[in-house]
Length: 219
Image (cartoon, rainbow, N blue to C red; front, side, top):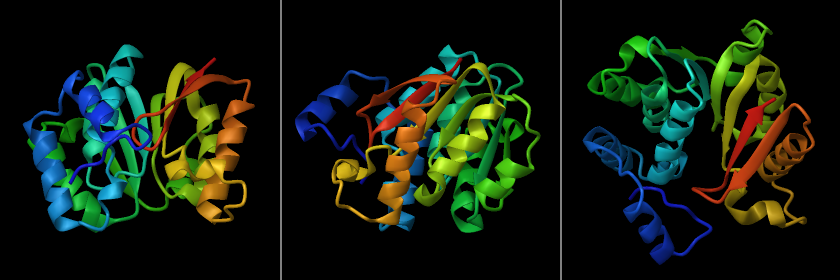
């Protein structure tokens, strides 16, 4: 079973996907293998319509350098890497060798191994070890939610002007609206959403695709 956009009806989601560019055979095979291998973790994979959006936004922004926080089995990284311009490079950050072994297999199938670098360590450590200057054209945040506010604060200074930051799960399955929800992950997502909305370094919009995706443009 693949992910779908949660905040719209099943029928409207089906209409949305029927009128969007569909995932190709490699992405469909990856989604199927992920569901078979990790039936309890399929929620970690982006919805197909979000994958299409990642490719389009990367391509529209004419990005050549990208960074992804949270790779899982590689669906979103393939979508981003495909959108990069000639000679583009994507840095993927994850902690699981098991999950990313599947990603590596599909990067090879997709012919993308020459443009993706994987670093297996906590994403916040990887971020903080990077030079502080503006270096990235596109970024995707989809890692552990507890660190979302820190990811935001570390990433924004490293984005070039005109760069695009995309953040998944910014609705936290609708729980951001429940002021009484004291789940640490929900609190962290809500805090990042507030930080981003008040950040005058960017312009942004929340889109109700998947579990909510925030798209921010660095000024």
